[in-house]
Length: 326
Ligand code: WQD
Image (cartoon, rainbow, N blue to C red):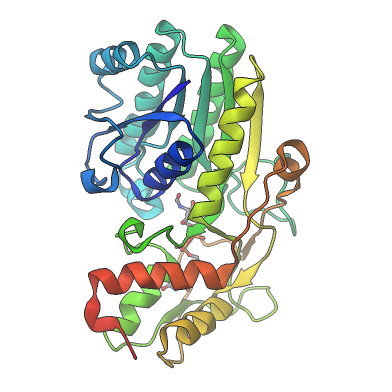
């Protein structure tokens, strides 16, 4: 099979490309390079610059490279920005996917893996979120991911396309310093940035109904997440007509305060955090039940939170050498 990886020049996509090629799969990257970086794509992997809204270009790429499967990661992913620009998010994430699915159907592609998110669950009122937990997204970003799942599933039902939606929990870490996330919009890089600037890391609220009062999340190493794509892609190959949905997390809740303590320990900074008001819209606890993919496909996460922080830090000091401590 040859897999088209949309968004393959992004932080997560580049890890998926590496994991798929290491597993012997042929890959082609399709990315508009709006946030992706061409240098993240291995030299031997063809990189086509284009938008998922460009039906003609997509049709050409699918035909020219004889694409038989698609892993679709190209999307906008900032929750806050999606509140300010909902139509932009619907256009990029929903209309872009609709156009892509039309091209995929036309080209008779066999398998489709969608990058979805725990954001589809919104504010779950359960200890462990299963794939059956009701989806009530709280942001246009989460809505576009849920609508994307519907589009993919409906297309599968109508055409026989084998589909899977992977709901990522909180992704962190890097498989190499050059592959690290360059954005500063999630907890780990935001804490790195504060430490580097000589400022105290911030905890957005410590009055949540959790053991230490700070929000609890399920952090997953991006290399484990990438391996999950390989496992799912292979499962689809032998399951025409499949309609799969999996949480991709570790099933372990870690609080913001625990994360900041561990970041301080790994980086050698010893900077106590400061507590600021809650960030609007943050659920107290979002932790995956990761048993479905383990039971059905045998995938398990291998890396822990320390591995995530250590590898993310190596990437951070590559870009910010002044941050390094002896
Ligand atoms: C984690 C926790 C913050 C920074 C979002 C999306 C999700 C996915 C991942 C895209 C929260 C707290 C953070 C800081 C803090 N996105 N925090 N101080 O909000 O769980 O998930 O990103 O695909 O869909 O919703 O992730 O990393 O922003 O925050 O206290 O300086 O850390 O309040 O509780 P979040 P996050």
